Length: 332
Ligand code: ADE
Ligand code: ZN
Image 1 (cartoon, helix red, strand yellow):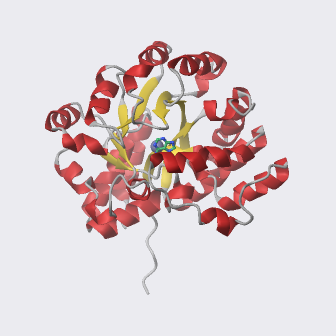
Image 2: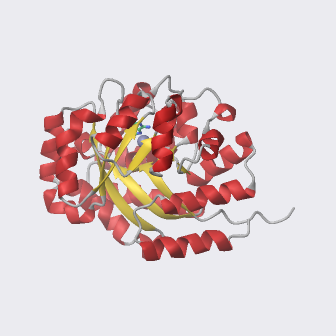
């Protein structure tokens, strides 16, 4: 058997740190913090990972966060992700977190951000991964709650690169968050938002025209609107697509039916990401491997996806160029 080639160098741009909580760590943290989980064993928990839609997943995702209490917990969670990401060729990661899901449980935003940044500050040295942090607003909470969490994050804004928008999409359009995005932009932050995952193309238009996003997270439903595709292509707005997530949350029936190739063929700036890898069956490299096999993507297409991941990142131009050179030099 020939040796397995190393994974292609890539950036991960759509990754919820809370979605990297593996059953093993969940049980260890539950024990450490004296938190009772409604599952007797790791296998019993894993058996619950069969979702009917986004909300069904979110119910478990938020429930399991109960084990995250201290700065050390957030640092351990982040280090566990970085180790796995490194093994799958991730060289740069732009990481989402959901502060409202923690402050609602009495965990201070400073505890969350200090824990995350403790791990991220050492990430380049320890794992050879550069990182950025993106603070998300929960769209099923009120616009006032988003403004409150943004104001409470002001002392930490120098640690953030962007704001994002996630959680239950349908019924919670981007326009609801116009004001907090204006404040974020004014503070010098980049803007991204989940749109067009379960929600309609109209939500992608709103993310672009009302929130002024620099990237769209998911965006797969954009294909239903020809004019929207033309706009996304013309402006080369990146879409952070998450193939395994789309199948697990039943946005797409089967991976073989995923529109990733059609999106590339349309000229969209598409990237491949893992979303919530502990829940959806794989990390960034697993997503690359899965679409390669299901959609029969050749080496040139995989290389284009890896290049797109760095092109779509918030890296400065020097670092971006260095990573693109790594992709070009890759012999997989
Ligand atoms: N939060 C974590 N994962 C999410 C997803 N796929 N969509 C919306 N919100 C999320
Ligand atoms: Zn997501």
